[in-house]
Amino acid sequence: MLENKMEITKCLICSNESFFIKSFKENLIYKCNSCNLEFVDPIPSKKELDNFYLDYNNPRAREDISKKNAKKNIEYLKKYGLTKKSRLLDFGCGDNFFIQQGNLENWFGYDKYTQPIMPPEKFDFITLWGVLEHLVNPVETLESLIQKLNKNGKIILTTVGTETGINYQYKVPEHITWWNKKSVKELFNKTKLELREISNYFMYQNPKVYLDCVLNAGRVPEKLKKLITLNIEEDIYVLTNEIFIVGEKV
Image 1 (tube, rainbow, N blue to C red):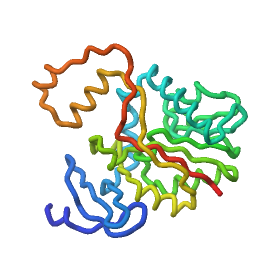
Image 2: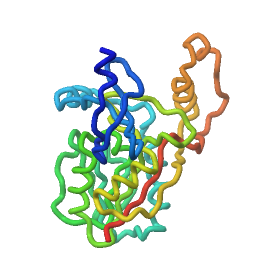
Image 3: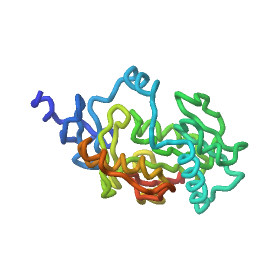
Image 4: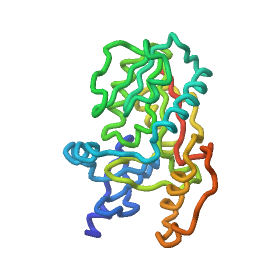
């Protein structure tokens, strides 16, 4: 088993040699020598992923919190030209909360499991909120989405970042890749997108859910977790372990 762990494998993005960094349950995590992308190997099968997402539930994606963050994100994207007339596709839309907060006439959601109809039109904006780390073929998926962008159209992404200073977890098969600035730039070079922004991502969160995430990431023992409480009732605006990315088709 140890010999298998130490085998060299190719990066999902740049195909350069990658090295084993740790085991996570029955999974092996590798890191690229060139672009520093972290990824699981082998990639989960379609059957494994379908079984996982059949009962998928993200405790951080409460409806009220998701809608509040959607409104915040919509407001921010106005700086990149988003208007009520813009055509927008939310890829990996889940329960479609982002679309519900926007312009329903020109905005569409697509999700393999919840909204499986992909509109044929082209778009001014395509968003992937917390989707990139779930993709089995990130380069191929992004290339196909770029084909649906108008000239100067924008791709907007958030994804798990390995350089934010905030702990992140290896959650397989939910997450397949973990990203940094260098690997994002390599992805955009491969897909011929111009990078317009890459920054830390802030979001609204329920304080109790956020505390639980922090304690889990810090591997705090269950006995101690039960002794730690928060006396905060209102949602909090916090730095996350995700990064916010904007690319443009030129």
